[in-house]
Length: 407
Figure (tube, rainbow, N blue to C red):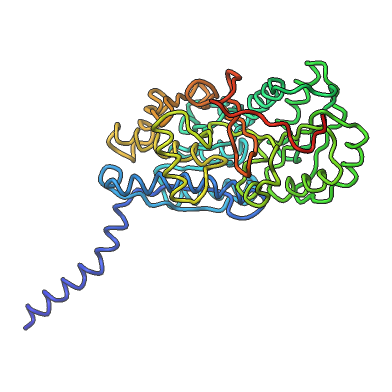
């Protein structure tokens, strides 16, 4: 009788312990993204790409036979202390084996995650992040940027604005940006380019997030009558309210939204009302038609899963997960973080459009197989009309003169 009770007790204990053993046999993946605050929409775009990659890997049997388990952390508005909390929680406490972020802190994230060894993928697009990386390349060798810097992205925006098949009525520009690191970097770069081209930057305004009454600025803009208005605020409500107040008495201006156009909520809310707006996405999957059959298959799958075409960062974040997983398979040990980072830096990753190759600063520079895509909203959807570099029209899609411009 005692023997039977012992056997039953052992069976019960084994059943209780089984979930713990299974949970310990997963590979934890850190996902620090904005889940609240002004960057929430962009954070959601990144999450969709990350989740798609993790689900694919798990459906195929996991990584080295182990399932991936995402662990999320809300980065909110990227305050330095919040970024550090995320790194200490994910890498220090949970001990994840990779970290996949979107926007993550414009430099403070490099310091925060560079304290640890897990490969860290971010979409900062920030020269400030590159500068921190270069303070100690060996210390920060686990840091990988999924996109080119704001300086180069702004240069690309300018290149396309100058290449549009359109005759500007004058050489006056207005630049309005958020008072954050990204807005400042893009605004200053555009200002420099316009001046070098002989244009007058008639207004350069920095505004706080939450601005939704544009009357005073629009009064000045209507006096200036600029040929180009560039708005760089990566939050949907600000750019939606700007457009709706602008369109009440529009000027003959090309309205360029840069990266501001691509939080999904902008086009989702406005639909065809947004037709004519211009924007750009670095390391982007061009839509509605992809450049290769493999990319088209990815695009179709994304749309089937999420019910819409990909926007800011989805494909970049997806590719970061796949690049890391490819390196882990090659190394054979997810815990050997240094070897995995070395593999990524040396070998890159073959994606749906071709090769992703990180440079000596661990930055994915735009061009070749992974250019910057420039979009115009047409019939309520983001349509790729240019890629850069080099600056060239995308397939047979063409720029359309916005309806509010009277020629």
